[in-house]
Length: 269
Image (tube, rainbow, N blue to C red; front, side, top):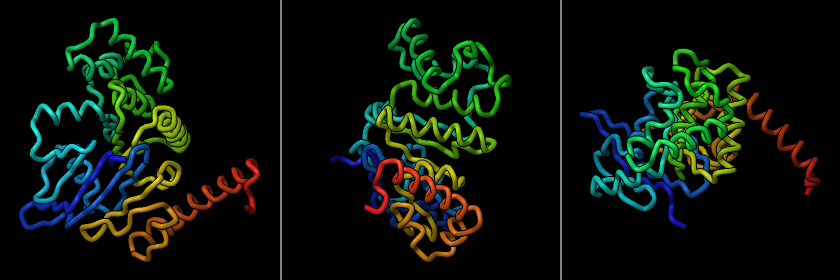
């Protein structure tokens, strides 16, 4: 099976400042991988390099088996149609309606008539549980939760195989955050998406992640399951996962796992 993302020997350097040093990361089809780390650890920078928005000082980034460095512009543009991005705070265009924001990636391809565009936009609104009557609204008239869902609809409008989420629940209250995480989990399962996510939110991370990549000291200090991550005795991991908020999130997941085992008859097996 070919990795969806393969980062090998990555060095990121701005002048004398080294952000990543010989970093390696492999994401397989269908995985949900969360990038976590302290301020300045290079999470967003790593995502930008996987997206091809920044060039590493050395090393390589392959997406769908294609190297982003050294490939033709046409080939890289073709690969980009196979992923979608949910930007932090949604990043909707303020001068465009909900409909036109979601339609924009389709219209940029200049390959579809307006009837097809309309059908796809309405389908994606349904997919993220936004009523179609909101299609004519402007971003300024939307709640934070609606902005996130519409931005997610835009990220999915080209029916990508890979989705990048940058702080998907930032700015949402606990109820809206939980609802949005449930939506992401459902879409991941229904659409068989591969997801790469940057998040500081422990509840989101614990609820969604198959693997956690912890960045510190210019590298990945651990890349594995939640259990593997919290077993590493590193100051960032201890503070992040084993502080009060982290322990609450882990306890909630433990309770859910016990309940699932009890209802499926797997307890004690």
